Image (spheres, rainbow, N blue to C red):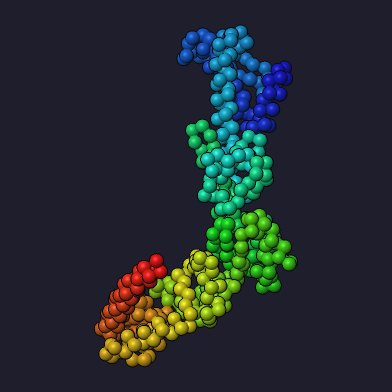
Length: 405
């Protein structure tokens, strides 16, 4: 009984997570290559079999038994190279098969090094993951030996290696963290309906509950913020807004713009644009730093969101009303219909065109065409006025700059 061979196969199979049968087949093929090398006959009929129970090796050339141990040093080297190549190929196949099934999961690993900006993470004894710079949270650095959690974003098989792509910026990383921290999500009681993220800065999450007794926002936040705090710490302080999902677009947009308080919303389904009116003291909150709050709210809801103050909103309505009144056959009720459609400015009417006015508002085609034409003319006039105003301001600014020198 060849106990040593069996032990070697057992150890390789355990260490590299390779099926034992694959290793036995690799050994047999390596010995066949060695025998053909020894006899100098690349196409000769050689058969080698290893008993899976005892480890005993039997070999035949042209149906005549041979002693595989007497082949010599050079064939042994050939066998060694073939075995190494085949076991490496089996190892790659094993790694690929394991990690391709785990794609989209969160995994924990140890930081090994940075390689040209890419973070190399040791996932187990034999496998390394690669986190490109674009998949790393901006502003975060990791020390060698540090434990780090990340998402298995992709698994690619190349000719000589398996490349496992990791991410900490992908929105699904947030989804998986919530599933780990909030049992109600993993139990399908609460669902994340939408998510918008700017990694390292802010994330908005819209959640809903399938059990009316469970508050989805409260469950995600946790007692005294315990659950959300764990996620925020994992993300290095990234702000997370949890809002309640609603099938009503008007309510959803209102929720998405929190913490800002919304005064009024006009939805234009033709343009998929939401005009949101907020008081002056809520304007900076609604827009957010560098426009982040409104940008994330737009991505979360799928609506193009414009933020206006009451004064700007009223100015737009007034211009629209004045424009409509210049068109023969149009009256005050037409303005009300347009506002109901979500058209609250001459620019909106120009963008919407005549077709929705005819089909939705039942306005006569000829009148609809004249209304849109008037709106286009007014938009052009306003653009030219704005351009002229800028041109007049520029020389004045240059004069002031010259005087200050």
